[in-house]
Image (tube, rainbow, N blue to C red; front, side, top):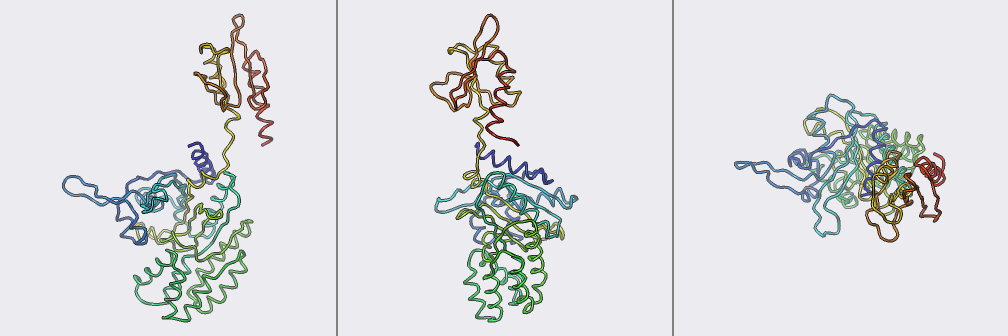
Length: 405
């Protein structure tokens, strides 16, 4: 929980500083939010925890939320649509059935959503916010991957056919079957197959690379121009901000309802989180033609690898000298330490070594308390006469340990 709270606080502090407001959505949501809009692939819908909310005569099918974005959109439509753009964030658990038991079926997410902005700078803002959180947590060695679901959808529309067929192909690509889909498309349209291959083979880490691919794709398929321009604008702004990224169009798994740029943060084989633009979701849920984008970070993963603060530096064990009874003076001294910002733990019978950085022993001398402060890291012991002297030593020691801010 100490690691969990550390991640949560870093995320909340960053979001509040960027102007986002905190929300909390219900754990139970209506199933139709996830089915009627086609927002999740059949594979993911098969993993939700669903049951009948029975009231004695009838009932409605509900789910343990498998996702944080869709409940946020529902809340926005119901209560916050007058705020545009609305910048929202949450720390919530989500649920997904997993047959092998190798993965947790309850996971915690740190999510941020921006509802009501069409600008590519909104996508970049979310990416920069997520990266700030990772930096605050001391998580290094991460890679930012960029893709664009809108380009894939646009190319699939070139196949013709009905929307259901295009959605089926898109869902299979998002489930990680891009290579198989390219081969299936090749039988129907060799020209489209070459463009899909070019799109999924696109890699690189500069706007110039995307510009070169844009020239070829837009020449063959003019309707891709808007999507390519959007992708290029995001890449250019990220480059201007000194943000390093890697284009990887085949990373779509888990981004079913996204319509524009998508991104993912990876540390070696750990997927730390991701997000993107989902301009069709609010209209599908009856909220009007409102654009949106967002991201979620995997709190459980972050808690496992984040650099945690050394809380022991300000933890003090307060005890009676010689193991005597705790009296009023000891309570009052501990309270003064807490008011000064330290963690003061009353000794209620600790045996042997403890994990406290400091031990403060209090004894009575001629009606006045005497203090012995021990630094358990160095073993140095100092006799003191007042709480102000104790605070002075603690402040100097902590300033020396943490360095200038």
